[in-house]
Amino acid sequence: MGKVVAIANQKGGVGKTTTCINLAASLVATRRHVLLIDLDPQGNATMGSGVDKHSLEHSVLDVLTGQADLIDVMQFSEEGGYQLLPSNRDLTAAEVVLLDLPNKERRLLDALAPVRSNYDYILIDCPPSLSMLTINAMVAADAVIIPMQCEYFALEGLTDLIGSIQRIADQLNPELEIEGILRTMYDPRLSLTNDVSQQLKDYFGEKLYDTVIPRNVRLAEAPSHGLPVLAYDKKSRGALAYLELAAELSRRQRAKQRAAKHA
Ligand code: ADP
Ligand code: MG
Image (cartoon, rainbow, N blue to C red; front, top):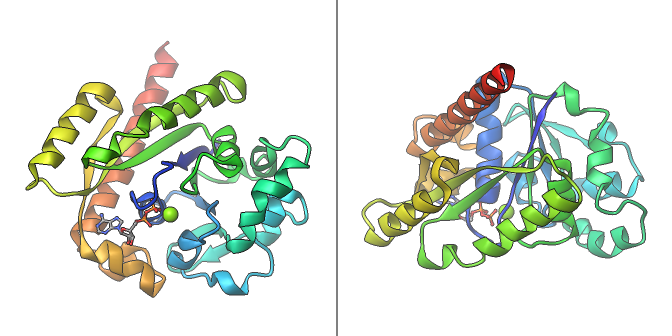
């Protein structure tokens, strides 16, 4: 059964989309089957996967509303090597449209059911809000990855996010857990980075990934070419960091499976 991971943080600009694209491509590089779902009306994950958001016949919105089948809407990203469920600004209508539909929190979960077992990982790029779209992502997900910049204000809002995850776990999806906290745009020369990093370690313990994503200009350049960084500059520090994250993710999952077997 594919593991569904929502990449979420209601703050914008923390590296959600960058993580989604590059973790997807890195998992593909280790021969995993991956589906990336762009659930942000900005469509950055779509463009960054080499698919033009302006020329979509159907988008993830049609899947959520039941106007189209997921199989017919998804496209293969040649550049990333994964399947993509694309998005564009049509998705801004979702907040309103979903309110009138039955099972409004479970639309994505239901749409994924027939394909879930075809993938090793399904990654969901969430919008920068705790909206109905993010709720759909978390109801469909097994786990959440929270990318964070190690700056003072990064910790603000984290309690809201964790509260939302807890509420969704209590009311809608008892399986949901925090998969891990990922430090992004990391600059160890800044003492603030180290302070915040230590606070995260104290608070989250093992949930904090050992892998950190450095600030790396290649990661910022790659999307303008519609490429994951692995296809743009595979030797860059950014590319290596996301490969390391994919390895850490797999390692953790194997450890968890072993623990479950022996329980
Ligand atoms: P979000 O999806 O959370 O809004 P993005 O992934 O779009 O965040 O990142 C915000 C901006 O920062 C983008 O311009 C992106 O290219 C850049 N960026 C993200 N991660 C890094 C990094 N590790 N190093 C340098 N630039 C980064
Ligand atoms: Mg984004």
